Each structure stands twice: as structure tokens, then as C-alpha cells.
Image 1 (cartoon, one colour):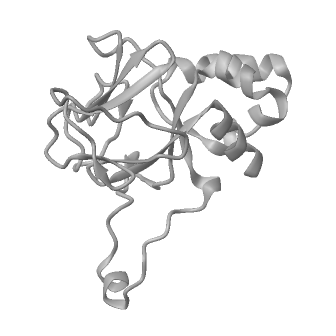
Image 2 (cartoon, one colour; image 1 turned 135 degrees about the vertical axis):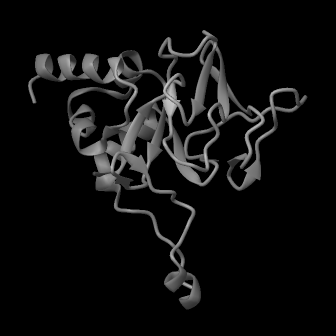
Length: 187
């Protein structure tokens, strides 16, 4: 893909709040450096490996009864089917220093799944630093299998490259620009 066409495509991705199929994004790693990915797309991303069914996310934690009876672990779909959220304020949330995560369209990251609350969690952005807080969700927010503190807690969770985040039953992987670059090179 030519650099001009790729630049135009990046602008379209940034206007949208939909996750972008990784197959569409993979050319970035062959055209841009890690620093350029950070400059053009931001420094934080969420990788969704759950399949979409009719535009909705199929929960990644749930397993079908036959698999449970066999004792089989539910494995993630292939990386080639993954989607990428660009983790940034979109202007849809009323809070400019937050990146909201939830089920409805006024969130910056929309996870259309019944286990996700309307306003489920948020990333607090302070320069290049981010913390993740649960917003009082019904099904919890987890990071690396530990419950993420709520907005009023004294402790905070700072996501790191490769942190597995779970909102309700939807799992995503937090990536920095280097992490996204590495994933794109492996696809």
C-alpha cells in the first residue's frame, strides 16, 4: 500500500470508533517505525481477539457446554482475525482526560456485549501515563485476572504492554506502540 493511501486510511481509522481488522492494519509495520506508529495512531491500543457475530462481540471468556464437559480450554481465535482499537479520546465522552469503555455509543471504546455495562470503565490519561479504573460496573473490570480498583479507590492500575484486560466477559490485550508493531510484524 502506498504511503499516501496508508496515511489517508489512518485518518479514516482515527475518525471511526470501530475496531479495525488487524489484516487492514498490518501494513503499518512495514511502512512505519514504532515511533511513527505512536506519532500517527497514539501510544495505546486494545487488541480484541473475539469474533464478531452480527456486528456484536462474542464473549471471549465463555465456553460452550461441550468444551466444558471435555475439560477443554477455550482458545482465542487466530491472530489474523483480531481487531485493533486505537485507545484515545474520541470526543464522544464528556470527560476530555478519560477514555471511556462501555456498551453504548457515547463511549470512546464501544464493546457491544451484554456483559459490559453502559459505562463500564475508563482510562485516565495524564500525559503519556494511563491508569485504568472500574466505573462501578456490574460484572467487573479485571487486569491479569485481578479486579481493577474503582474510581474512588486509593490504588490504581497502570496497564503495561501485554496486560490482559477483561471488561465483563470481553478480553482484550493492552498494547503500546512497540507491542502493536510486534503483533503486526507477526501477522
